[in-house]
Image 1 (tube, rainbow, N blue to C red):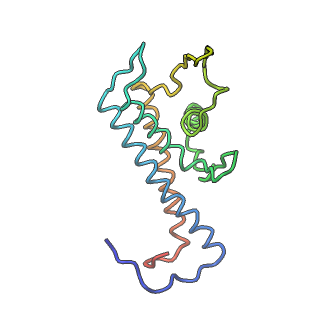
Image 2 (cartoon, rainbow, N blue to C red):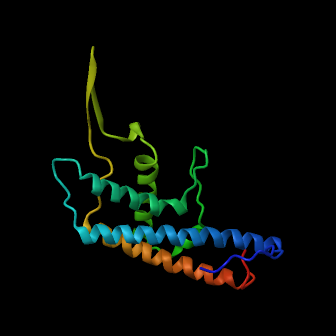
Image 3 (cartoon, rainbow, N blue to C red):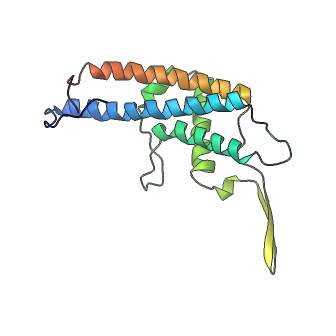
Length: 181
């Protein structure tokens, strides 16, 4: 592993600072998308069964949750704000077809309504209240993805990875080389 220089980082112009902030965001996005792709590959490889009458296995639920969280992380931020903001430039999504963009938005929605938050208004819940307690039925909201959906999501991730790399290549032309920034 390369050693970090003890010299102070070079002075950057305001434009370079802005490009460096974006480069760092894209660098982290590459990691999140790589983890997403690896989770998809694991789900495809394992072929975990999708039960019809019972809840999915804890492993299938955990991998589905990891897929959604890792995918959505670069595109939203929730630093105490009630509305998530995009963190990666929307221009990176231009490589997606209309259908792929709908899938992207659906994953973000799953993250916002079902994974990061429990949206009781959006769930199919029936509760029966008794004097000494209650009973309830809640349909599983985080339905695991089917194999065809996983392959579709993998194509989206691969396209986004290529676009992120293209953006990084462009940004590298404007940043100092061979110094830690």
